[in-house]
Image 1 (tube, rainbow, N blue to C red):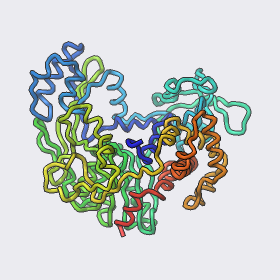
Image 2: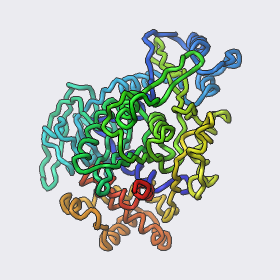
Image 3: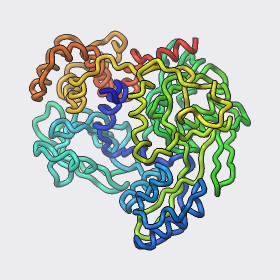
Image 4: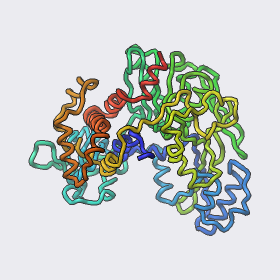
Length: 525
């Protein structure tokens, strides 16, 4: 369990296994810091393609490269010689990326979870096509068009993605509403579904607002402004901006948000490469939160656009950075398409914070070492010990120590309660299964909302959970169960809050005991 944290496991439980049907987020493929597309189309076959790739590298790559050393290598090996973020995309992947970057998030607007062999609707986006058709939380999807997806124990991969589709196309769903004995058939026309990249926005304390951003999408800066204005009405004077597990997104969204918190003419970030002249991104001023204390939360999964914003806040002394060292992704990619629909994403420049520091962590030890770097932070004690790494002390340096952004205040990972038994529960998805299968019917949204701060999973629920685990043929180790009980009870609570109160409810519940949030409140006093 040393490479897992409670926070990361919860993210996995609530996002990785909660499937988006009809509002495909695709944020992992979102435009990454000034990502560009070339309109020209290059080679049509593999033989020409390798030669063309080397030509493109010579003409565009961020650094000087010995092209002769790249000849006769397979494409993937050739690109791995350059950096971890230059990549070749087969036609299907290139198409998916381009579609996602184009903002084509089309569907019907539901979130569902595969509970055993049934698609359970866990959320319905208000005013989306599914909402208008009468689909409600708790409905079970039995059939998608002519394909039975319930009761047949279909492989998970055959269930995923059946509801998604192009705007204007219909999908026929056979639905079972809770308490009904007869199924209903609904034909729903897919449409564009607007999904905010603001996961949560609420008052954390009397004068402290909290905003959680999961990605930097096309509308993030606008959504941020709306959230700030709403929080100000409720008395906000200080802000906690949570960028943990935010993998990046549009550069324009990051700089647009920076405009709301930085003074006019402040340098946000600049880019530069061997073939790319320096480009400065400067705050325009007139933002909604240029004054007021600010704390920015980051962790090892905060990357790219998140690091740009956090780096600017740190270098310009606009606020305090709290958490753990960020990922360290500071490379700019440009896409070069080929005639067969595939494409080359090539690094053309680097990002630098206002003081001139490079965000990018080292990749000199090779591709695999780069991929393993986050895990190594656990094994060398960086994540779990009270090891303080340089924050503002290193601002005069031209590079971050180890790459990424070092927080001003470090908060280690809390591993209490993690053991092999808990790991097995997470692997088998027993926690969300129990919440959706059992607890969701025992508690109402109104009860949880009214009692959020003091509400806890009771002993009866816990005993039933243990029985549920046993029915899943998981051996219950009494000692490890007792050790992980506190973690399990809290996980069940926050997952239940997510089901009944959505993303905002989930983060309200998580933040009640989050040590990083507690540190932020202390720092803002």
